[in-house]
Image 1 (cartoon, rainbow, N blue to C red):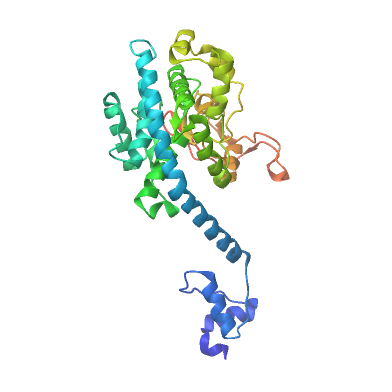
Image 2: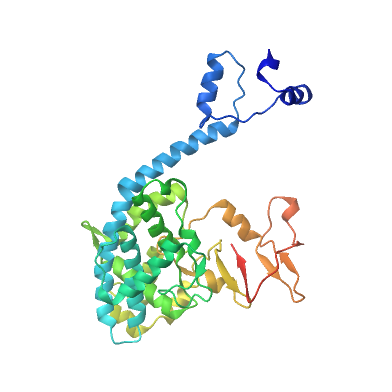
Length: 355
């Protein structure tokens, strides 16, 4: 009898709606289904149970690939890059490129030290690396970056807090932070010194030897599978930067060659590469989104649908101080195929947050 297993309120729901949903203590769907089948109870199999099983299989596959393949490869890639980036630094030491080259070495050193606290890095980068890692480990929100000092509003260090399956082991936590750093920190074209650093990074990758393989091949061996799992880079890749370097500086360009010719021609050419479609940063009022997004992220910020959807509804403020969502292009749904006014959170201070 239902009255023996259901409460009066649950019976009332059944009478009015034909079904009732009650909380349970099962951790997964399948024990519930097994129990119901064994007791000859009717089953209602919902789509979310199937999607959940697919997600578990996907998550396990990704986790195994990261811990067994991607993480060791990233360690080897970092070690090889540090050697070559240091060579580039020594080439341009004493020139106006010295600081940018030093920050390139430090940038790689952060990832290396996140994966291995005792990783060998050049002494001239120790303070930069230690400060950046302290910010990453704090996960305390927006704050300054020692390696990217021209970030007007700093970096959102809260993004480096491991989540999901990345909380299951120290190795996965380290991998998460290292890849997040490589995916979020951008060498912006609007900042020539950052572009100089990007050029030094690209040269280091080209000349690196990673377990007997050329650097670009090792980078692709890490990037391509992760792109399959979590999406393509939202913006130019380092391989595209290498192609431009060949066109502008010649196929055998060294750090000295590039330093002598300067970054201006490269910046002009790189501006024609596809622009990113998402934004996760603080943008000053009066600054353009292009200035904040165009540039190189070593492992790329990956495109996901929800981030792109929020990008479509980029908040804007008109001259009267009213906020509106500007639909950047025609969308299939008639409800969003026009510019429309909406209530927005008020901007505070000199910047607004757009993610």
